[in-house]
Length: 167
Image (tube, rainbow, N blue to C red; front, top):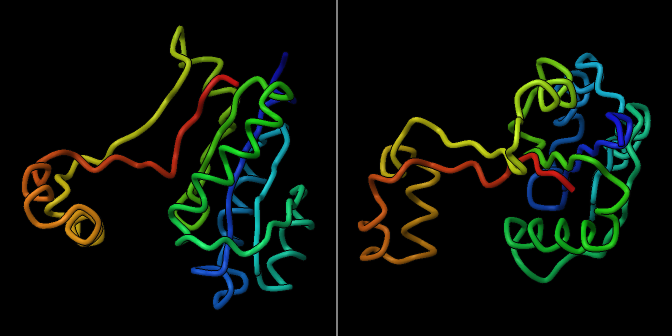
């Protein structure tokens, strides 16, 4: 397999996207400028019509899904799993990026070829403890409760919305 069989996969749904048409254009433009030549797939539900136009204009395949019953951050993990369960054999590398927070500076396929070595998954953390990053600290307390949140307060923030993995 070669870099044309790499995937950049994203998820857009009601929670964030519907009220911000054009909110992903910086991401889309950075992807275009990066030189990435693989497939670009966006799993979507209830997106703004202009966002659909923009995704298609930038060469994305759109997979329409029904509005999920669970919150966005739970649903995105599930729909990515379901998509990859059916399609993983089509790809060399799968790159899942948190669309609203991510910009590409270069071709991720080339970076992986030059830097992945024997690793089959590449993930990232941020150099800040959970308790010092407002959103993550809020999520930790609301999902885990105060006692468990205090146990992980000084652990580094992990970017669960960004990874690359061998398919």
